[in-house]
Image (tube, rainbow, N blue to C red; front, side, top):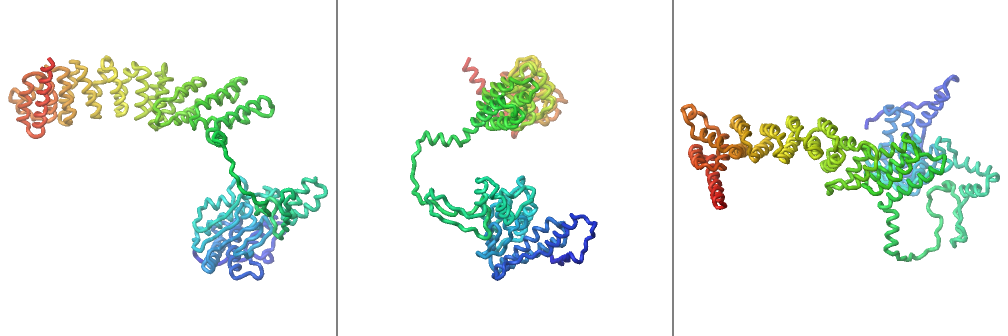
Length: 635
């Protein structure tokens, strides 16, 4: 840290203030003077360690106050930070860890009071004690970064934060210090400390009590007297009559102080609890009891609202939404249906525009249904029957919400459940499913294609040509599923031919195999054109599938084509370059052709091609002979 010159001290006498200046400016100047001139001295007669500790805390206390007055870039702040680093490092190097004990108005090191201040607004000890801090230990190896972070926490408390912000203990825990330890109890705020900050000191409080005790009621006087005087155990408890005399710095009555006396010792005794009773007690505080407690609360609210003019639905509507969301998230279907019945019965007494009807409809909105669907375990592949029972009893357009969920959710399990629910509520609403399909892509679009096929097969078949044009693999696979489900439908022929020419090879092969299984001679030209156009780029797998499909669709034309390829007539045909794709296609077809010349053509091709094609020809000949032999035996 760089060394900077300390700021010039502001002296009131050398800085006169005109009578016309604003009183707020006078107060600001006085605060600045107080901070700059503030000295944090130990008590007279303090040890060297106590003086060093007081000096370190004094630097930190002054810096914490300065943050409310100066900009962080101000030279004064830099000077204060430098003093903190130097004083703390000097103490830690000389005496080791700084072990601070916190009392209501005092700070102690090694049982030596190094700080004392009864002013609650100014007292650093009071701010720590009020929030529950009882001990702070700053280790010898504490780095400057942690000391600086501790300063930031103290400065936040000096600004007077209130109930909407974290207290000192919470801030210290959140800081995650490694070299600063803390001991704490639950904090408190005295009853006489007001949120506006107009606190009074203990001396003023004692004076106020003495002036008003005669006029107050006996109960109030007794309570306030305990605030000042010592406590005494009741003689009826059997405890000794021990009087704790009030110290000079005694905390208020409700401060979290150690016990002032103990009752007579007792020997613990074991009381056996039956299993049923133990289970009942455990369930009272268990998760399983919470839904029932929520339902009982809702029922009691409805009953109270019916009998009260001051309690309306608007007062507890947010609670109903919270209970609904809890049951949706936890998959509490049975309890959710009970809640729905309660709300439905209550809503029956109000007109349609009443907010409770809107809440009733919210049981089936996108958010609610999404929570409900996500609650289904991943091991369950179908929607529970309770889903449909719940939705059937609710108003609203469930299909619209389900379609929106399918578009937004990317979980495979969630989409599976949603898709099945759309199939249930999509009957008669094909146009809306197709409209959503136009917006969807990838896996979601594929889900909608499958849904469309289950809701209306005819509409799905008519939509096939447009769907194939999308060239999305997931959608093409679903189109293939539809075609394979209805292989004899006249609508699929055009779609099947288009699938033979798509970019994805796996889809092409499935479409080619389907063409072969159909055995329609009219499909032969499509296969022949495909092999002639793609012969240079065909994989062996696709070429074999084309050859087989051609032999199934039109054996005669296929045999004639292979004769032309393998035994060309005429000089031009003999000079034509040999293409492997055509050779492999011929192998795939000749294996399944029953003509006698098929085996001869395989031998010609094997002899001419050699290498890999030779091995394929020999394997095809062996399989062909086995197939022919088995066919003859079956006859």
